[in-house]
Image (cartoon, rainbow, N blue to C red):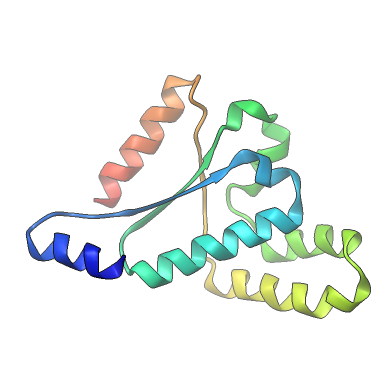
Length: 129
């Protein structure tokens, strides 16, 4: 994928990476942590300007996904430790520290039924380009 991006850029095209994650991931700390790490890996691997979008925000309440727009590894770790066996706590801690050390992953909410939400995402994509 990186070579495709380089080819587009060499022809004068501007390219960005857009990582989409479903809002239902915000209901489970393990899913959200894995989604955040996957977004971080995509950001680093593609080496492109990047935009992370939390999609389908209309399917879950704002109280569920609102706290995960700018996730903190420490917060995720506390929630994750309560639901995983003790033998995985050091691994969970390492992944949470990795997320906090880079501090690059933030999400924009996308609610397809809200026109303002669509405008924010499109405006952010324009700014990134």
